[in-house]
Image (cartoon, rainbow, N blue to C red; front, side, top):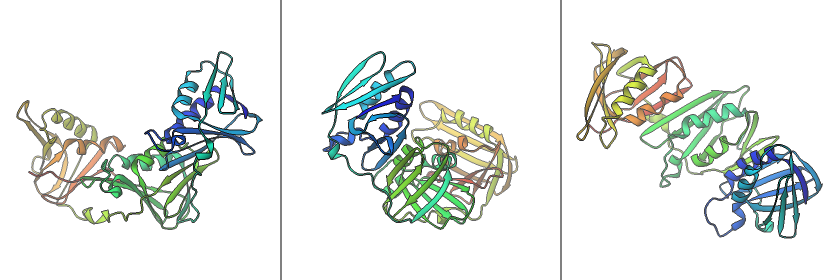
Amino acid sequence: MIISIDKKELADAVGSVSRFAERRSTTLPVLAGIVILAGDDGIKLRATNLETGIDRRINGTIKEPGVAVLSANILREITTSFSGSGNLTIEHSGDTIIISSGTGRSTLKTLPYEDFPILPFPEASAANFSINGAILKNLISTVAGCASPSTVRPELGSVFISSEGGTIKAVATDSFRLAEKKVSIPGSVKPFSLLIPAKNALDIIQTLPDEMIEVRSDDHQCAFSCPSMMITTRLITITYPDYTQIIPKTFVTEATLLRKDFESILKRSAVFSDSFQKVRMRFDVPEKKIAIQAQNADIGDSSESISATITGDEIEASFNYRYLSAPLSLISSDSITLSISGIGRPLVVKGLGDASFLYLVMPMNQ
């Protein structure tokens, strides 16, 4: 194999593809590598950790076709170290590869290509639709932070994506809070549901371009395809809990307030929160204010309030301040609504006039 590739384009491609190579020690060393394939379909880079995989096309000139596997870490370090513009040449012979540019030359040992697994592609079409990459990335990134970091319940460590008519929803929860994001796409999409491990989902959205993406899945795999790449991920086959049951249908108290005011008061109160990161929030209906209190035996305490339009009953509840703050950066509206359905019941946070995003947080024990 002898190929010529632009330095910057190769560095960018290696940087994204290496994300899908195995990072931990493994009984199959080739999983820590990147496949460089030059043939009738052009030049491709491939990597997989058996959870996710990628096949990415790059531009270049093929002088001799062939295939070879190099360590992802080493290839990334070398390609990012080249300075200036122009092309570099990759030449494979035997069990070595020579990477040369106008300023230097590196000789690397290859990994056995025969051990590299075939990237799975969904055979059936449990889901098959197209969506703009920027929209898909926003859909997943908005909720993924709420997925559980624990592996005890894989379904809670995943992002649940489903369709309902022309609307696609993404949901994630760790049982303490929940985020739901909806987007509408042109045309009708047949009903489907996908449960993608959150870590896999984050790797995918950091790699996909902002162009139309075809999504296709069967019961075990999901593929995201566009002209420049295909990314696959394993799916979780456990049934996702019916999260709609915990979303309140009615509320005893609702408040509307400025997002930045709420963000500021939480930031100040966080300094005085205890080891459980607890703050106490009171909906003061007569005074049309929301009061936030925090107390720490080692630091002191704080109590302050902000103006709000409030309807309903006066109510108090304690929350983890980090959970209250988390959705604020995801809301573009200047004003937000806080709605609570009673003592010991969840608080729902939304952007005023925005029905596409819902955030729910459970109260803490008093």
